[in-house]
Amino acid sequence: MEQTVQFDNPREAQDVAGRGFGLLDRIASAFDVRLAARDAWVRIEGEPDAVARAVRLLGVLRAARNRGVIPREHGVAFALRAFAEGREADLERLYEASIPVTSGMPAVFPRTFGQLRYVEAIAGNDFTFGIGPAGTGKTYLAMAMAVATLLRGDVSRIILTRPAVEAGEALGFLPGDMQQKVFPYLRPLRDALYDMMPAEEIERNTDRGVIEVAPLAYMRGRTLNHAFVILDEAQNTTPEQMLMFLTRLGFDAKCVITGDLTQVDLPGQRTSGLLEARRTLRGIDGIAICELDDADVVRHELVQRIIQAYRKGRSAARRRAAPVGERAG
Image (cartoon, rainbow, N blue to C red; front, side):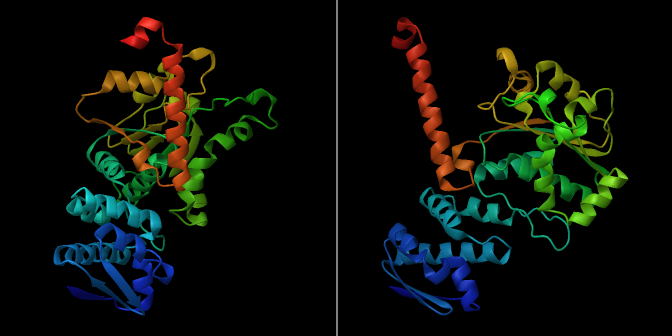
């Protein structure tokens, strides 16, 4: 069987199938079909069922591209896995889940099914915990949801906070006043924000108090009404700090708490407030706890491998350190 997919123009075809149609070999191998392409068309040859699935994949990727998601190699690999698992409908739902941010800035999309669950949890709950390794979009997606919520008028301000915990460095020895000392800890939050708002709008909203970026210690004693609040790097809170923060939320407010429990920098083997909160608050109505994992990493593919290698190494180290009887069990 042979079927030709006609795109609107060569640019659209190459956005879907890769520059120089470089992603077609991967698609051909996955579906056991033969593909040929030129200008604005792709011709597919093979068994009828395989051709039909390949056509549908190209249609899904084309629809995603036209909503602002350029598939690229990582996106095509993810889509092929979804097709192999029979999750075509879930993939279409994923590509429809755009988060509109400031006019003139591209919409933000979840890139994995775990990220989609996370975004949906934020939309449906007052408190959402996003827990997972680096690169899973915990902070970035929370920021996008905060900006979208502010633009809709559902809240009147965004509050961004992190604990200022020394990751092997002593704040007291750094130059500058306290604000200058903690600024590097807050910079990642501002970096995400700059992807979603023009710089002049961020500065104007910061001056007006619509956007506030502050260390966690500044939250003590406050009631946060009509706000979208993000607590980032929450694995570095103590249990006392976490409880203090959890009780700040006021009326018409929403809170997202993010963290990576494999990167706790607390001194003296102290228990992480995020770990205790996950254990204590699970199952409470209105609180969602989303666990992201290696499959949700959307950075360079080596990041996934690095995380997996470290997890494997640490698991082996724990097994070696366990008592003999415990290892046998």
